[in-house]
Structures are given as C-alpha cells and as structure tokens.
Length: 381
Ligand code: FAD
Ligand code: UDP
Image (cartoon, rainbow, N blue to C red; front, side):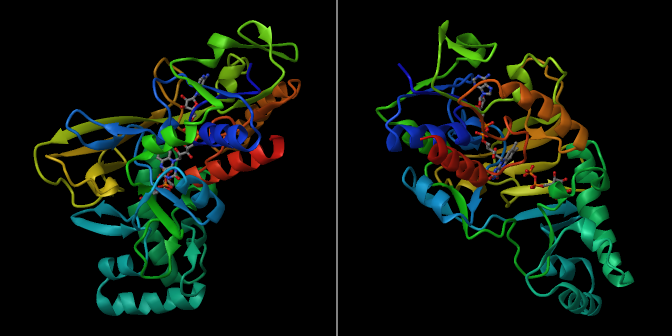
C-alpha cells in the first residue's frame, strides 16, 4: 500500500516525504507521534492570538540556494537579519561579539587600538571561535578573549550544557564566533528570516500532496516492529523504504542505555504591555537561571497583536522521563561511540535510513537538515 514510510514530520521527514512523493511517484506514509506536524519548527497562535514557536525561537537561515528554492515553493518569506543582544550588567551588547560590541565595552581610544590589532591578526570579516581567540599569543588580544569568554560564553554555556566552554565540543561554541566586522547579525548567511505566515503553514503545504498521507498522534512503535532483519507494518512485512527521524536509542528500547541529551523547559508568559524588551532575543550571559528570552512579535513581524508573549528557556539534563524532549545531542566521543552501537543494529534492515537531528545524533540547523533530506530522496528515489 505504501512505498515509503517516514517516522517524524519535522523538516527532515516532511522534505523527504515531498520529494519521494512528487519526484519518484512513491506512496508515502508519514507517522508523527505529536498532535501536529513541523517537528521542532512548529508554530501556532497562542490564546492571545500571538504567533509563538512552541519549541523555541526558529529562524531559517541558509547559503544553500537549492534549499531556499525548494522551501520557497511552499512559503513566502519575512526576511530580516536576525540580531541578538546579551544582557551584561546594565548593558545590552551585540552577540556575536563584534567590532561594534568592542566599542561598547571599551572606551574609544582603547577600542580603536584593539580593533586595529584584531584586524591585523585575523583580517576584516573573519569569524574567530572564542576557543581559538583565547590562544592568541598577543596579551591584548587575549584580554579581549577573556572578556568575551567571561561575559558571553562561560555562564551561558554552564547553564545550557552543565559544562564549561572548554569541556564541550568546540563545534558548539564555534557556532557563535567573534566576528571581526561591524555586522551585528547573529548569522552570516545570505538568506535569513521566517516563513511569512509561519512555519506550520509551510509544512502543511509541503505535505499537501496526493501521494502523501500523514498520521499524527501515532508513535512508530504503535504500527512498526523490527524483528530479525525484517520490518513489519501493522503486522505485515514491509519491504519499502523506512526513513526514521526519531531518537535512535528509543527505536531499540534503549537497550544499551539512554543516549545523553540536553533538554529545555520553555516557560511562556503573556504580558498586557506593548513590548517587553525591544529585541527578538536577549541572551542572559552573566545572570539568571534561564539562557534567553524571546519576544515573538519581533521575530515573526506580527503587527496585529494586543500585548506581547515571551518565552524563557531553562536548560536541563534529559532523563528520558515521560514528556521530556531530547533537544540537543551532546557531542562527545563516548556518546558518539554509544550512538554507533545503536546505528550498527540498523544495518541488518535493508532500505532503512536514519535521517535527522535525533536519528543522526548531530547538531543540524533547519537548512542542513533539509539539504540532507533532499539528497537522501535523490539517492533512494
Ligand atoms: P525534529 O524537528 O525534532 O522532528 C522529528 C519529529 O519526529 C518530531 O516531530 C517527533 O515528534 C517525531 N518523532 C520522534 N520519534 C517518533 C516516533 N517514535 N514516532 C513518531 N514520531 C516520532 N535551526 C535553525 O536552522 N534555526 C534556528 O533558529 C534554530 N533554533 C533552534 C532552537 C531550539 C531551541 C532547538 C532545539 C533547535 C533549533 N534549531 C534551529 C534546529 C532545528 O530545530 C532542527 O534542525 C530541526 O528541527 C531538525 O529537524 P528534524 O526533522 O531532524 O527533527
Ligand atoms: N553561546 C554562549 N553565549 C551566547 C550564545 C551562545 O555561550 O550568548 C554558546 C553556548 O554554548 C551555546 C552555543 O554557543 O550552546 C551555540 O549557540 P547557538 O545560539 O547556536 O545555540 P542554539 O540556538 O542552537 O541553542
């Protein structure tokens, strides 16, 4: 009845579903355990009519023309250069730390001098990971590095990961490098913004195809079983493609133990005031128990609102308890070894593919996920 079954209706699942359905004329079933599509990109109107991102602020950004083109078939865009500030004492300073930030934290003469040094050391427009900046032999450059480390990275990273910046994968802090330019934008990519009418309508359009069926409120374990190299769908052997975008340890009942993840508790608040912080995202890098506050109307561009809705993010260690969501893979060698043990179990199943931030235990952005899904559809379509 179905040529392909896809577990998960996030960007990975929805992209591969659409491509297999339209390019390869496959009959596709998408199984999603939540009561909605969109995965962690899901957005909706809250009780006050404000468009919120239920799983934290999502901004689409990419350099990949193919991905942009593909998604643009399903949405128009509200384009903007996403900017973030950090609250350090009484100041709100641009993050990533850049030459504008430098001039906000040092008096003019010193900032001019340091700017020259940074330009000489790295060149205009470079993006230098904080852990690399700290290794610079020049004492004055290291002084800047110390400032950035102490005021932007240390406490935020402790909250987010429960570890210091030097204890986590450099790939993670490297996502927010020190930028040797006057560009205040959080990302460097050519295209930045959100779908004009929200992510969820974009996903609806992607999945709206005669060859695609979507079952929400359905856990894959309700309908799929994996036994001795064979996959069964509702009790019958299934020989089509199975693309799995959920957590790999769950698929095998966590038999080798849970893969470690960081999770987040999102606490939303509606306020009867026009504006709370004048910025879409404020990072709390030296104070508070939460990492950041997002004020949605600045992120989505929504104008017709009364009051404003914000969300605070409180990180914690994922335990696998009912209702907890594994958001971030923890990129460490021992965890990757455990992942590999699970991955090996999938090898005996032909036409079985792991795709997605959870299934691959990686730290992918939306665009990278969409690209991987497009490539997989190309390969197996
Ligand atoms: P998901 O979106 O997690 O989708 C997987 C789906 O599979 C889920 O809907 C899940 O319910 C379903 N599922 C899992 N197991 C089962 C099962 N057993 N049965 C049925 N269904 C199942 N990226 C950006 O590019 N820009 C951003 O600004 C950005 N901000 C982020 C902020 C936060 C707080 C987080 C956590 C991530 C952010 N990301 C951002 C990353 C982005 O969320 C991911 O790249 C993207 O959502 C990954 O898509 P996915 O399809 O792999 O996974
Ligand atoms: N980070 C930080 N302070 C900041 C912003 C980021 O310490 O103000 C570090 C932190 O370790 C974080 C990582 O850089 O987890 C990556 O940040 P990013 O904003 O990319 O995280 P995401 O949006 O994926 O949660």
